[in-house]
Image 1 (cartoon, rainbow, N blue to C red):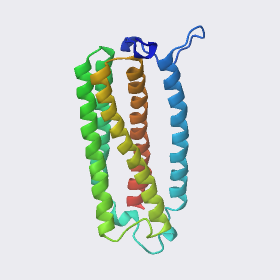
Image 2 (image 1 turned 45 degrees about the vertical axis):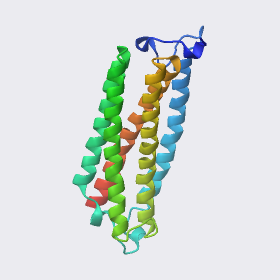
Image 3 (image 1 turned 90 degrees about the vertical axis):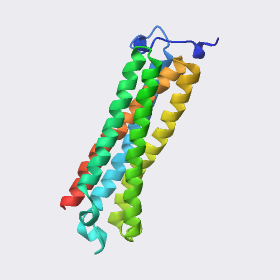
Image 4 (image 1 turned 90 degrees about the horizontal axis):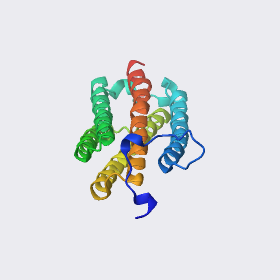
Length: 211
């Protein structure tokens, strides 16, 4: 059996190895993925900056503004769904520490279902806007609004695919060095989407509604 396929104890898997005398595959990969997440964060920072510039009345050219179509209770439901999804994934990772495969899979399945709920609400919201004749071509302000929210939704979509892939790998391979490392990086990715959504909810939806 190769070194990559050897089983590891999830309780002893570290995010970063502070020792220089040995090579830890899991800590190296999670550190590398953390650096990637920083670049992903810069992409969102750019989109937020663009929205900030284009979120004033003159950027909508007399067309609809978020204050006319944003429903705070609707996006709050999305927020609850995403936060519960992150919580469910956290419970799954706690099961991982105790080598509980069924607990991990159940937590990931719950995270997947709640993530699908979040994405379904987003798709319904965008479909409603298009039915009202509001699209990315309506104005610069709407372009910034839709690009920012849908880039985040795209991250959620690929995160859901990743969750399904990891469920399949845990069921077939168990707790190998590769699967544990990927589960840790997926946790980082999923938590980042919740953090970004907090900013989207406050500065795009709530701010747009009250403005």
